[in-house]
Image: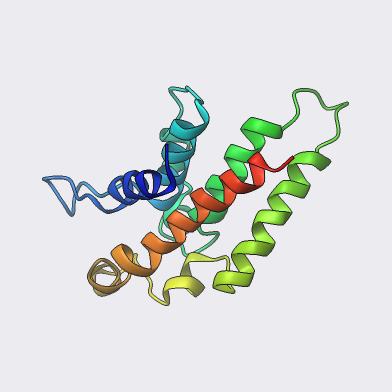
Length: 156
């Protein structure tokens, strides 16, 4: 899949609002990253996007770790993680560190609250988020997460 098509698909997962919005919500950042990367990397699992649901939005709307960090870490673990405790986790850790460095260089922060500046657990914060942040700054971060993770995984 070419980069533009992948970005369009990623943005669609993240930005397309369901008919029952705001009760139903677009896929969160972690779910979106997991779905786009699993599509691209041919990872099939009934756990995707479910494993990202509680993690997204800064871990259950709490403004903690952004799903654009947790999603790539999960996918890197799926692709490069270990199966036994005797194996070293260093390969996966070094790839996640590389991703984190790139994300911080570009966006400076790693928590959802620092990245968006709003508390989306409040009605006013959620409204502001969907009106002026979600489809713009957050959509760009999600596309970055997918592209950079693929780049890191494809390096020799």
